[in-house]
Amino acid sequence: MNTNQQYDAAINSCKEIFLKKTADYGTSWRVYRTISIADQIYIKAKRIRTIQEKKTQKIGDDITSEFKGILNYAIIGLIQLDIDNDEIEELPVAEVEKRYTEKVSIAKKLMEDKNHDYGEAWRDMSQESFTDLILAKLLRIRQMVMNEGKTLISEGIDANYFDIINYAVFALILIGEGKQ
Image (cartoon, rainbow, N blue to C red; front, side):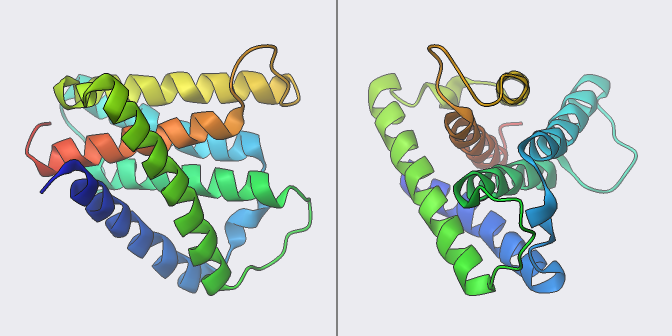
């Protein structure tokens, strides 16, 4: 498979989980504020890093499922930024799927553009690096939240979520290739 096919396969496995959970739980995630979403991603990334460092884990969810969770929470973050209101409303599954697909489309285009310029350098990176990059993006998001979303020169919260999505996809692709 080429990168686009691998990307789509990784996204589809995450999307399937996301939509099934939406059917089970509704859009209970609508209650999350930006900082809470960042913290949910942080917990998952921190767990991956701990497992990487200790080379062992004690609970069942593997690193692959954590990267999938990271990706799905980043999508939630982007959807929440779009809706931008405090009303906790239930969204229909069809609308959630449409919004999910829109966000993934933007993330994939970003990946394609960066792959053009960087020559798929991510293929030579370690899983540990993706984890660290995700953690760094989360620290940036936290700082932006403290600054009420304002930046002087940097990209916004949404750009960091898009990067997190792509780092998670890259990790999933490499895991799928047996490069852990």
